[in-house]
Image (cartoon, rainbow, N blue to C red; front, top):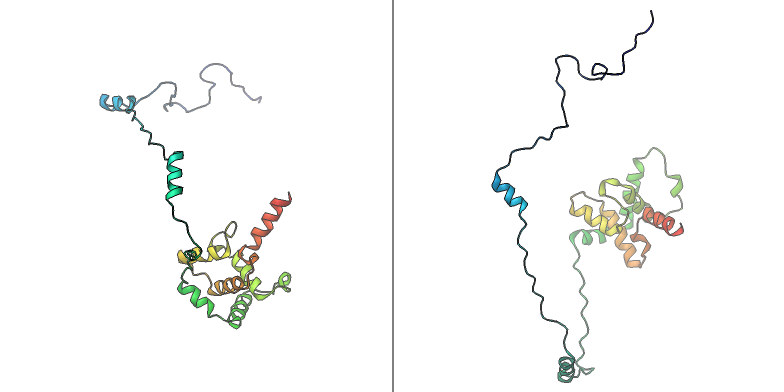
Length: 198
């Protein structure tokens, strides 16, 4: 038996709901009734406030001359050295400074003990660098891109994520040595070198 064709014209050829089912028409505009008071409040614009410009804060030449003439000369004896405020150490920093290298090695061995195989690509690195790189890839402490390791550790501590105190200890020890490259995550260094090289 040959297949039958539908005609292409008329309303019967349109696909859609069967008999007894109504269709939704989007051709008519349906608006919600709104009270007239609300319409007026929306349509009318708010009054414009007048902006008063302040007087010029730039002193005139005469005022500058008066200031210079009346200013006492500062002698070398009266010179006051600027005081540099040293931020107080937090409890975590004090605790981290007391951690020895043996405790850091013990922490790293416990981390390595969780793995099935040793890290072959990190054999030539120091334990401190291994600890910091492990901290970099630990996603539970937040992203490591675009933030110093110390700030990331402090942020994780503030958020109650309990970052390892050994990481802070390593960072403080490297800071006392004067090594600046330990503040930037390894991944961040790689990405910035790629961006600069391109």
